[in-house]
Image 1 (cartoon, one colour):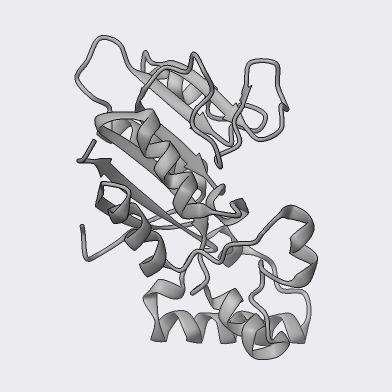
Image 2 (cartoon, rainbow, N blue to C red):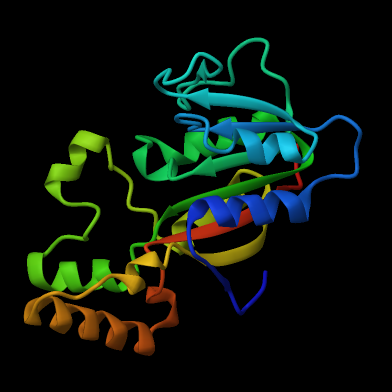
Length: 217
């Protein structure tokens, strides 16, 4: 795994770059989009000449198939060469089981591209100091089922347990740095966040990205 993580402005840009980079040299490629939402990644997948196979816990578009990651992939689902899993892990009641079910859905040597909120982010660090809770994991976020705090070392350990080799780690979603500061309080927060990031480079990015290859059946 690279020791110097690259930085991507948002999860869509990260996923597109990783799909292009890790596209297998095969005539038939199946890309499973887990947590497909309203299908924002469809065009990116089709540009690869691949089949887009969207899944979600709630059916937001007619093309998607419902998949509760507490269970194996739905009957009839094709095994995937590539899997996109963007901002899903934090919503899982049992993330280790979810990752195992994803692994079982993938072909050997298949590649998983995931993003998840970054608990180390400067916003989370500052929020923990001021509120006693991470920015994106306060009590109010239970409504969104933010129930798993995805610390990097835990996620990587879970992936290894599920038969993955981690290839890349990336800093994702830095667009907050471009925000306009309209008050003195906002300016103070902006400067404190910048200081935290200068002390801990992993505090950059509201999310982080991981690319992992399935190496075990």
